[in-house]
Length: 319
Image (tube, rainbow, N blue to C red; front, side):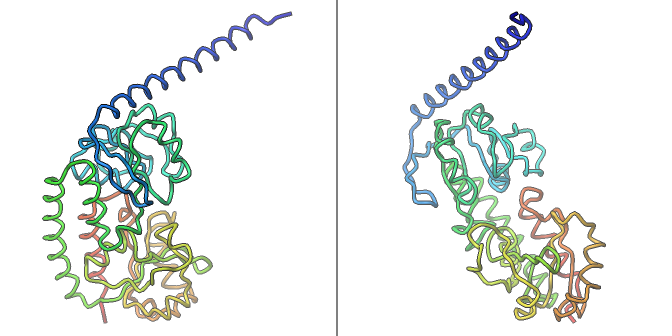
C-alpha cells in the first residue's frame, strides 16, 4: 500500500528544495544584473587574474576576518562575515557566511555581493563557485602585503572599494601611533624577538608575514624568524624548533596565547619550568611574556594590537 503520509512528506521536501533553489536562482539573476549595469575598472589581483571591479561597489563580501576588519575601519558595511571575525559590534551584525576555509556557498549567493575579497591561501579551489555569484572576485595574497602588513592590505582594499579618504585618516593615525609606540619600545631595550606557540614537540613561530610581523616591524623590533621556511606560503605560522630558536638568539620570546586552550598563567609556567625551554637564553634569563589572546586577527584593531604589544614588551626587563 502507498503510505500517504510518506508521500506528502516527500512532496513537501521536494517543494522546499525547489523553492530554495528558485530563490537562489532569482538572487543570482538580480546580482548578475546589478554587476552588468555597474561601471568597472579592470585590475590584476595577487594571483595574476584580470578582474573587472565595480567602480563603486555597494555589496562587498569579505571571506577573511582581516578583510572584514579593514572594511569596518574604512566605514564599509559588508554583506556578510566569517565566523572567525569577533571584534566590532557593527560588523558582528553582518550575516554569517560560515568559516573562512569553508564558506557556506548558499549564504554567499544569498548575500548578492558585487565584490568578493578572497584569500589566495584559502579560496582558490572554490573560484568557480564564487564566480557563480556574479560578483567580481579579487584574491589577496598575504605574502604580497608583507612590506607593511598593517598598512598595505587596507590601502589595497580602500582602493578597491573607493574609500581613499577614510584610508588617509587611518594612515595618519597609524603613523602617529607607530611613532609614539616605537619611541616607547626603543627605551625598553629589546631589539630581537620571536613570537612562538605550541609545545616542545611542535613549536611554531610567526614568520615575517601578517599581523604579527606588522606589529614587530612597526615597533622597531626584528623578527628573528627568517622568511622562506617550509610552509611559508600556506600560513603565518611555520615550524621552528627549540634548536632554531637557540640559534636565532632572540632578546625576548613572546608566547601567543590565542588558540592555545591554556590560561596565560599556565602557559607562562610551562615555558619557564619545562627543562627543554631552558636551553633558550632569553627564557633562562626571564625575558619571556605572554601575548594576550586578544592580539589575534579579527579580535582586535591593529592600532590597539600595537599598543597592547608595546606594553607587553616593555613589561619585561631587558637585563
